[in-house]
Structures are given as C-alpha cells and as structure tokens.
Length: 257
Length: 202
Image (cartoon, rainbow over all chains, first blue to last red; front, side):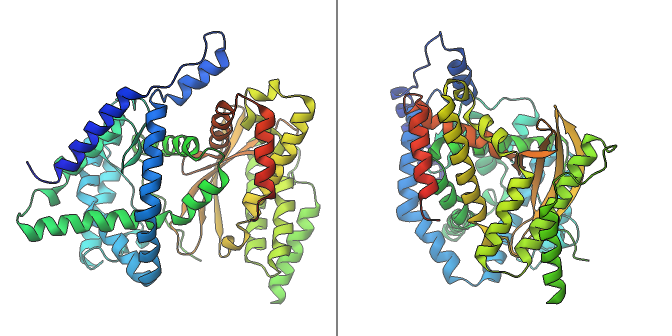
C-alpha cells in the first residue's frame, strides 16, 4: 500500500465512527413546513457534520489560513498567478478524462487545446495563454461525471480536511486522486513522492489563498456559517454539473475594445 | 477629468428618474434586460468615477433602492416564518434586512474599482426573467452573474442575484432558517441578531 492512502483510510474510519454517533432528529410529523425544510437540507448527519466543520475551522485558523496569508503576502503577484496556472495545468489530464467520460466534445476539445497551448507557449503551464486566446478553462471531476451519468449526490457530508461534500463527490475525489491522475502513475522513489507531496501542499495553500477574503466575509456576514456553506457549496456544485450537462465551456475574458 | 465628471453627473441624473425607462410596448423580457443594462452602466460609473468613498456609498445606496425589490427579497428569505411573525416583527425585519443588505453591498464599495459588466441574454424563468451577465474585475477571473427580475410590484425590479450558480436569496434563507432552528424558531431572536449585524462596524 502506498503511504498516501493511510491518512485517507484513517479519515474514513474516523468519519464512520463519528457518523454512527450523531444523527439529526427529524421534526415532529405535524409540522409539514419543518419536515419539508428537513428534507431540503438533506443533512441527517448534521451533528457530526457540524463537529467536523468546527475541527476544520480550527485547523484552518491555526494552520492553513496563516500559511495562505503568508503565501499571498510574501510572493509577488505574477508568481502567485504562475503557480496557480501551473497547478491547474497539471490537473488538465484529470479534467480531460472526465470531459471524455461525460461525453462532452466541446469541453474535452477546450481542455486538450488548453493543455497543449499552455504546456508549450505557456512555458510549462506557468502562463495561461489559452484563456487569452479564447479557450477559458472549466472544472471537471469524477463526482461530476457520476452526476452526468445520473448518480444522485446523496446526503450532505462535511469531511475532515476536505470540507463540504457528499457520498458521490467523495467517491469521485478518490477516483480522481488515486485512479485518474496520471502524475500518480509515473515514477517512483523519494524525489517523486516528495514532488507529489509538494504539489498537494502548494495546491492546498493556493486554493485557500484564492478565497481568503470571501471566507472571512462569509463568516462575518452569516448568522450560521455552517448552514450558509452547506447551501452555497451545494448550489455551486449543481451549477457546475449543469454546465457539464450542457457542454458549456468556461467564462471567456472579454477583450477590451 | 471633465468627461468623468460628466459621466457621474449624467448617472446621477439617471438615478433621479424612475427605474423602468422602457416604452410600455416592450415586453417583460426587454424591460428586465433594460433594467440590468442601465444598472450595470450606473454601477460601473459610480465604481470607476471620482468622488469620496462616502459619496460612492450614497450613490450605490440609491442605485440599489431603485433597482432591487428589497421587501420581496426580505419576505422570501424569512420563508415560512413570515406568516408566524407579528406585523411589528415583519416591519422591523424588513427594515433590518435592508440595512444589513446595504451594509454588505456598500461596505465593498472600494472593491468595485475597475469593475466591468457585460450583459447577455434575457429569458423567462418561471414567472420572472433571468438576465445573464459576465462581471469582471481586474486581477480576478470573470464571474457569471444572472440577475432575476420580477414584476410583482408592477415595475421590473431585481429579486435575486445568482453568482456562479449560487442564489443570494436561497443562501440567505438557509442561513436564517438554520439560525431560527437553533433558536426555537423565535423570529424576535433573529431580529435581535440582525440588529447586532446592522450595528457592527463595517
């Protein structure tokens, strides 16, 4: 077994044991409005989910957020953009595989074109030339592929470390990370696994740095940040899946006249 | 400089006019798109124009009031609790909702610099009209923003904003309903919490 599997297994075991411990109590049967709301939230594991929300929030406060602030503060802006572009270029094979499995020719074409242009003219993905040339990027992952195939999302899950999800997307994440990502197949040895770890770490900090202000604002403005994140993440996902179904490509940058 | 001042001046004149500036024969879809095109122009003029932060905030305040059906949004966000609230609570709630909304929008006034809005198609969505747009800010990826325009109050007014698939009013309603669920469904508790939000330093 590869060492990178261990934290995931531990996480799943923890989640399973905690999930058995806490379930939300359904509202009384004589309150149809409350029952409708309970069903709409689709969050029967709410006490457990809220627990992991607190854990993640604490981890974020002491670790990820300070790292992201430091990262954004110390590196010059062009370098931050370059790293972000390079990371998304590394993710292109997974996006392409999913575009193809979803049967979306336009999106697959965009992803392939982007990968070729950005890996060459874009200096190994550091510069996102493709977006400027009219091939903006989009997200695609195996959770979305399952959705396009007709698999429902299931109950809301707030996963340790990974955050808001559901059974379908959690499975999708596993398939993308350990099955579809070609960078996981090539090479072995200490250097390669160090490179992989570096990519994962930088990717986490880069992602977090991308919504530093938004999350601060959300936490300041929401009366119940957990419920707000639950609603936002679900709607955001549904929107992405809708785009995938319609073979809609990313939002193009408008050329200034 | 003169052109900028002229732009701001003309946008202030527009502010003074009633929101629906479309002929009566135009159908609801055209009217909705017209509202968003006009709002987009006014918003970018205010955001990119001269004037102190205070002046910009006041201009944004007026824009939002003219274009958004705040009471309809507020009612929607309270959901089933609107019916259980007393008349006084409903009044207090709508007033606070407006105050918090304005605070959240105009508190960001400084961040709108360089903002540009490209209005796309308008199409009917249920009993309302959805107007699509792409909003871009320098240094940020462009965002897909849909403006949902309703005509319940007679004139076309915005009743929801859907940014990258996330609806502002749906999200706000889940926040309120979760808060109420953990506070014995007591609307007064929500009103007190909103008072604190409206008074917090921005």
